[in-house]
Length: 210
Ligand SMILES: [Fe+2]
Ligand SMILES: [Fe+2]
Image (cartoon, rainbow, N blue to C red; front, side, top):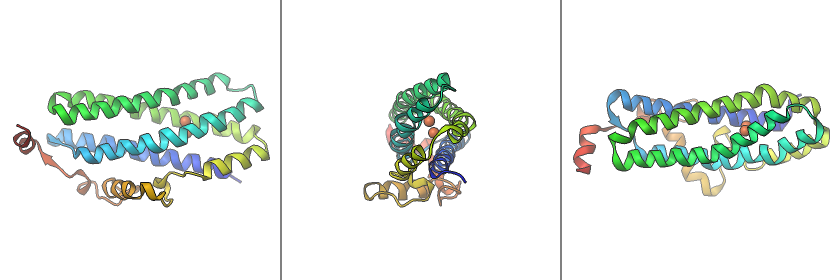
């Protein structure tokens, strides 16, 4: 039987991976069409990544799951240290990405490439991080943790769940998630890949901003 906490971690990884890939697809689509993205949508998507995966998911791993593993086994110590460092680095990287987006929004075309590179680096970094957790850490947890450990983890991971895994958002987040789900292509969102783009032709934007 799979523990609830493990299922939630995998579901939240899948939701984050889909969101990260949607962000890259959106950016790529606008580069190809030489259009500017809907910055409000991109800001909402990055805000979600900052609020849920960064502040909640990763924190529960670093503060609960990893300490329990360290208490039960000497295995994978270096890997756990590295994943903890990733969590800390991720918080800096999402701020840098939000700033790069703001640069693109405020200064336009000259900042597009820098934003694209920062986004690609962030996505590669997190996909690799989650793959490592799933390949190494979750199987180790299933081998060494006790029934009491699982009861604690199941309870902690059941609280504050990521609404993008199909759970009702807390009231404060309802408007944000309605917005995101409308923008992101299926299977996470309801928006079609074409409708999600909300394209602003480059020339029109330049006229508006000049
Ligand atoms: Fe993690
Ligand atoms: Fe994780």
